[in-house]
Length: 436
Image 1: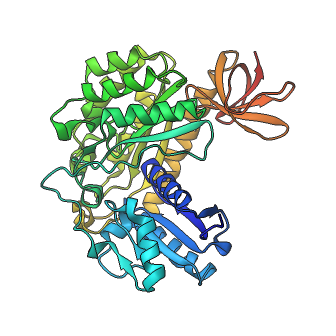
Image 2 (image 1 turned 30 degrees about the vertical axis):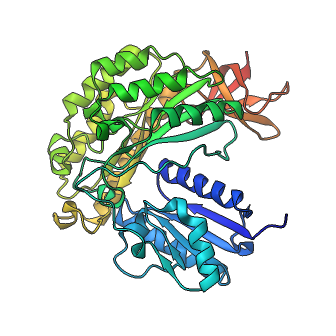
């Protein structure tokens, strides 16, 4: 059977977006198309957009225009959050939002038949903020990573932080059925995936649309861990205000759960957190980090911090720097605040751009130091590494704590296997290892 055409994909934004790109790829493959990594040879170019910040919105539009410039004959498809929130014309032939991505092949073929722009606005309204939408289930999604697979269990968010547009783009929380989650996990394990990363827009809210508490999310993790063939389990991100002591004790009993948690922070200043409309303060965050370390003694703790949030003073920024040290956060993903039209923070007094840049440099330097110290603390220890790549002179993989490991190739190792190694040295924040 001959191919119906070649499709190129480009993803901006979060892990959930990457999962949904993989889902779109599966839909095209099932319909008789083939995929390409070369935008210039594609018949169809799919850009999965992000709108979490003004900068993400700009990059989404830039990538759409860039694809059209590099390949003017291709059908340009915009999907995802930025296309959902676009007020004006988007530079694409087919535009899908956040609730109709499963119709992507049909929409493209409609365009090819009619050569008339197809937009999501003719097919459905934006996600509602007054009720929970149904979860749109793609079934089992094959990750191109080979040994690790992302699995989406939840969509939407109910938090309404003052800097974030995502609840308006994706709607309120919508949870996947536990049976569907178990089925995908079984399928992924049968295909040889050793590690599953459980993800969502606000994954700790799983089940809240059905009136369930965080124990429902714990049940999902226990379900997946119980499946034969799943060797490792990770969680995409945790929300401090959602965590209970019982939940943390519960996950501490899941042997397959890796001791690496991304605990959302955004700022280490209580006054900034209040302006952000976050549902916790630094004292609560510190307590949740302490409880996690009780259950996971080798824990690697990572977080996100927004630098230069409207009104952030030198004192508030310094509070954030000191909190990162006090809490012992091992890696910080640093983001300069970017105005997102339609959010409350967009109308607040803004911080000077140069000042934001300088503050980002300070925090990134601290993060590099913290992550290097964490890696140095692993020297001499025996680690389990999931092998993900063969670079010829060495194998590369990740420990349970999500530290990158470079392993000598004095014996053949299988991609996707989990091997015991000893860390003999460090290279910045990664490990140099030998097979144990």
